[in-house]
Image (cartoon, one colour):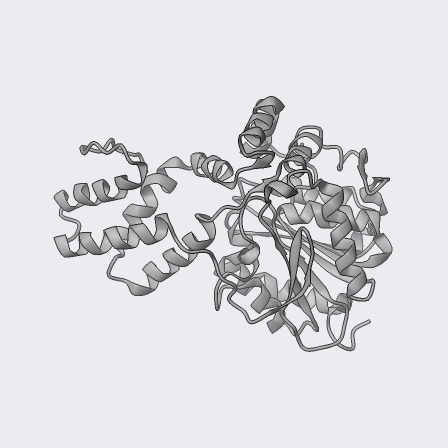
Length: 374
């Protein structure tokens, strides 16, 4: 969709959806009363309340970096830990909504115990937390769960899970990587180009502006600017067109709870990820040091499942599937699946949750995630 310059002058950025509504009224899309309803709904998706967990859970462990949420399960088997993305948004993406929840899908597959890393937004006191800090606390979680776990890494949580598996291969029974950038030089996606073309100094300046943290608001602006027509105009046009459809509005508001509530990241962690992983690709090259040891993907020998989106422009399929040639796992113990759709849909899209994740859940069960499995 091509954005059209509005006729109405408005200096407050949030005000523009109302101006858009007025322009659409002139085009006779809806009556005036629907326009007022639109303004109210637009406010809900522009400044929504914080996201919520869809499935009942309890906080098992409260650490500096995260709260570990325990969603239960059928009992028995190796605990399954979903390593949620830590990239500027809430971990609730793993349990987005009833009928649209990865947690719910995994529980439905009969897994014995499912947990999620609920990453904390960085405070000023957390600004010097580095990647080692996060790996160390994942290790605390695994040890508290008995010393062995199956890890399901989503997006940025995937390279973190893979690092942990490389550092402690004996503690990881199986590994799932979904939309996870393992070889960041693979493919030719926009994130790769952005990482290489943008000077590190600019990222450092953004961190400095956040008092040593990477502000979530800046990252959100970056994601939106990848698709400006859709993010700044299109979603409001769609909302207006469906304003009488209660389910559509509720779904939109639920998504915006997650999307429009970004979280800050520790500056040191963020700059390490940008420089060492996305610019220099040290993990894939076997030159990244984690918790005092050089990490090699070749040390990962557990069963591996790789999931990628065909039109994912955040983590291209090449960056995910490259892991198959870098790990030490035997080829006949590696599963790959390419699904339709983009990045976020890998974790909360109804089609992927219905068609792909039940099978992944069954695969996890066979690897030890269900009672009675070996």
